[in-house]
Length: 76
Image (cartoon, rainbow, N blue to C red):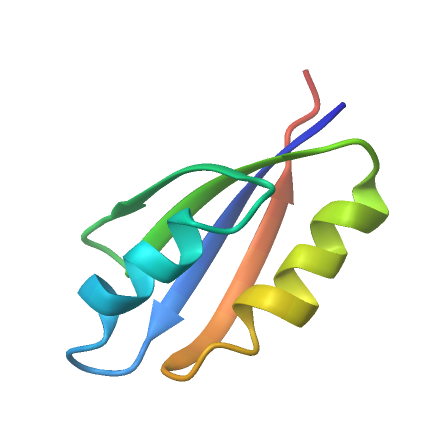
């Protein structure tokens, strides 16, 4: 199992609506609005790294209002 943290930047005023959409994705275990360089941090669990990257590139980056993402794979 692969555990990852996905940092998401959103357009102004879009964080709350996007939080619900991101949290509802199948591989997303949890998601939070945060203060800092990114607006949302999501935790994802998937069988393989490819599945995490697929979630980010196809599902999260495809949402209207998402401007940037950065993915960190947990090592332990």
